[in-house]
Length: 146
Image: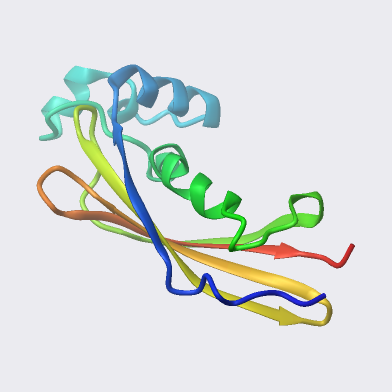
């Protein structure tokens, strides 16, 4: 299964996501987060936050608009019929709260082939409106041979 590495190093334009209070609540409910910081505005404010705090894995919500173009780029060449999500790693910065504007860029970090499978690694960098990096994510997908 030959893979092309010509897209390695390519960075896609930033996608900006406006973090909403109700989106945080909905996400927290969907994933079973019970910490009041994700649901109760007064509890979040008493803890020193300006608004509701997003659970850490809310990164999947604000990074998705930036990851999509990279995953679907024909030059990257992912065969989605044979793709599986292989892993993700994150380095966290300041917590994300409702009202933040998060800009995420995605770079094709590595494309390799091993044992007839293609390995596609992307790195996302998400920055808030204060130019603080809130999360750096490494996302890996594997494409098995057709």
